[in-house]
Image (cartoon, rainbow, N blue to C red; front, side, top):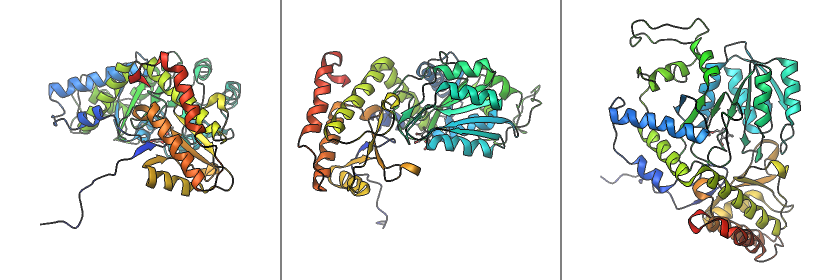
Length: 418
Ligand SMILES: Cc1ncc(COP(=O)(O)O)c(C=O)c1O
């Protein structure tokens, strides 16, 4: 029988928004590998390998480094719901949309929320964070590393030290930075970090690698709970408030990922394959080389946009290396531009939210997409689109400027690495 609903057949697109991005073909291949039972020794070996791979990505020795099944916000939710007992105080410094997301999740955990905000396009001075910590005495400080909504990255080196000084647990959302910019879990004293695959990790959305240190483990163990029907003999429950989510209970997840392999959910095998291969691809390239590749693409993109006489959004000292905010010029229809880029050139660039809606585009150069040919294609398409709309862009200048940045760096970047 011929069905009236055709099979899925996505058109080829170059995804240069703030994520998801085109998935590395090696990752797509890994996802097509056969299913294994969740307790098959080969599968549990893959689980252990995934733990080790993400320790290296997060640059941590944390034993408890594993995957949460779900998109990046699943990792955020698992950490916050497991850490925050109802009534506990959490401080969230907000510098974009995803800071608001952390607040939203923390409030649903029943935490007492204190927020501080800085204007979108800026980041916090660590002194302001310390002042708020001293004023509010939170138990947890939760903040975003790179907020794709504003394209800004918060320096975290000093924030970790501030939290240690005042005995606060620090959680960081590194969804948009892991694999594209340094995320130093141990060096920066980050107690818990989560991420996703669909940005600089060049994977699909649907798996969230997290890492938690002993300070967090101790807090989770105090809330440990065993599920009737599978609770082993001699199981010792914690005396803290039970974690309000079963799916995101880090204590149960540790029992599943640890030696006891206590059944919890059925691990999303194809997503584990994806996470495993995404990490292998990143580590094979080398993290420093990867960060340099992102910085170079960012510099070339910025030079090209500058040559088009477009204004970059936000405090450029803190711009993320993997996404660039561009102010939509007066008289240009931002959505019509995006639509033409998509339909005529097959290139997706990002829109924006909240106070930036209609004010900026966000152009991503993340992971697999972050390479010279894509930067040049995107700039050429944007220039043509803007000129079509009547914007007086100097012909050819954007590509020339970006190419100039690449040419100047070519000695440092052998062909496969640009
Ligand atoms: C910084 C940051 N945090 C969290 C998320 C949410 O991720 P997801 O949509 O995978 O749940 C995103 C996605 O854009 C993000 O950029």
